[in-house]
Image (tube, rainbow, N blue to C red):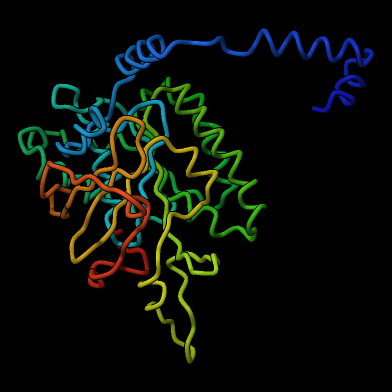
Length: 338
């Protein structure tokens, strides 16, 4: 609030207002800390909150244990690449008993595009952890721990996440998944700065929710094409030619993550799923705890599996560039089985 408006609000002179702002600023500003004290605090916080294992050995080692609690983790990629498959496997891991590497908790899965499949989750569990899932009643118990919400609008979604803050701790929620944030905004008739401003509140709220609850929040993000003149469009938007949809141009375009720069700064971990030279790849494109690495993967009945636990270090623009060529049989522009 400007000082003049603050002066009118608290009904004192400008001198007293400036003095009060200076004193409050000094009292609330965090003190200087050494790198050692920051490291000790980080280790303490990680010990208290921990990580959610992905059960992908190379990726978990790279992320020092898995998806970190207390921060935003983003999955970016074109339709059909495996983002929802990844999220369902994470939901399974969070609800799994702690004795078997899970978090033994509940999951809130916000399924914007109706891609969540309880049958697929149970199939992943049976194939990945047969010794547990074949126990009587275990499949039903795991599926019962995953609460699926399907908001019909951005306003409905906003109301849902506001209500979550009070119930997460009470109900032992250990993971929040939003699949996908881009789809929520794509239905709004706002562009450019208006959309970024609209997203700003959600960025702030989700970050504070992650820090407050000390749980991992995983959000999927779609891609948009980046042209030479810097104009952009979402990858699922097709051009019209003779009344028919034509996907070739967007399919072969230079792709970047949607939602803009403010969102990119807000996420702590960014994992990019892409198709390059006929192979699916998951990249650790942004992480404060590791260099950018790439792991080849495929999808089986057990879910996402790495072809190698040893990642390839990335350099240059390839870190943030997203490829979707060479896998036309995998890319489904209607968003099915993504």
